[in-house]
Amino acid sequence: MIISRYELDRWELFASLDEGSKQEITEFFVFFVHDHGYGVLYKTLGDDVYGLGWNGKTTNLLGLSGESYRAEKTTRPTRVEHLSGKLIKYFCVDEFVGTALDSTGCIYWWGNFDDDEYKQDIRLPEKITSSHRFKEVSCGTQMIVGLTVDGEVFVWGRIFTIREFKNGLQIRLGHLVKKFSCGGHHVAMLAENGQVYTWGDGSDGQRGYRNFLMCDEILVRKLLLDDVVSIKCGVWCSYFLTRQGQVWACGQNTELGVMENCERDEDDYTVPRPSKVNVPTPVIDLGVAWESDLTIAAAQTASCLYTWGRTPVQEVAVSAPLVAAFLGLATPHDQGLIKVDSGQRTAT
Image 1 (cartoon, helix red, strand yellow):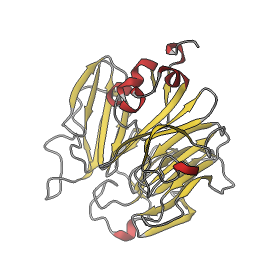
Image 2 (image 1 turned 90 degrees about the horizontal axis):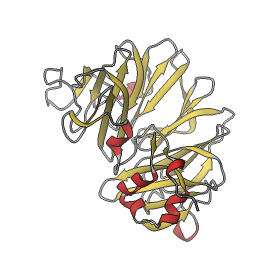
Image 3 (image 1 turned 30 degrees about the vertical axis):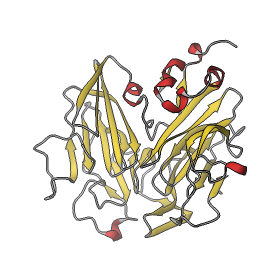
Image 4 (image 1 turned 90 degrees about the vertical axis):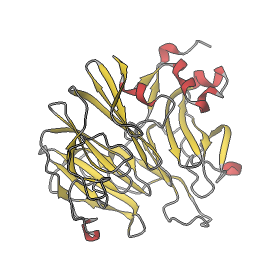
């Protein structure tokens, strides 16, 4: 995803910067924390990483050190010493933890993995010890998930307070994985055999089946949906894009976007099995962003851009790129970094 330098001002945090600072920005990731607001990590032309906005005393989500360590927020760009000069190519941050991937395939992690607001040693950004090299990384509420160059998936951290995987756990599904997406406490994986598999919490229908048991958390199950080409997990839900351009969803959200006549639980809130999302024409691209517990989804078709999450599915633009749905909001969770078009940068 790419935006122009002038579109940076759609985010209040960037609008507060002087023009010289904005001209240095090459890539960025924006996240949102309930009751606190937005935070952003961005890279500069010199491969420095800066944090701005919400950080959190009990989380240190911007990975700040020194006098800024565990500051509630920063109103000025603050250099992230432990990530600068590391050739970072991917960021992902949620409410308690953050992660990054560098150009050599190493994962960094930081934040609060212990759910203890009084813990004195909130983790600063550091490399995860692993003999593997990774090509993708993402994070949930308190877990880090990585996909190796060999198609294996590993997870670190915890699911709620029940399961802890601080030393890393391989999710074994019997097939190599092409793509994955991480929800708040669950993972969806698209394997090389063309099937989708899920792992983790499924108590809100996000794993696509009824009668979830707590013992299912560390068990892999196959999703009963064919021809999936892309998967995007929300906090408590999952979205699947098929080869035919249809979007299917399961789990729960303020507005999941599914048809009114779809199968629902008795509370009329949870959709336990994949149901078709109400986008009228074939979808060519799909993205989701997390605004705390709310998932904002957007679908791009050949002629229109649709979005839903706070509201039912609605058309918001004609012939617009997918990123247009997220201007001023949290950026898509699995996108990693939004690029700033260098052609729009004023020469210094």
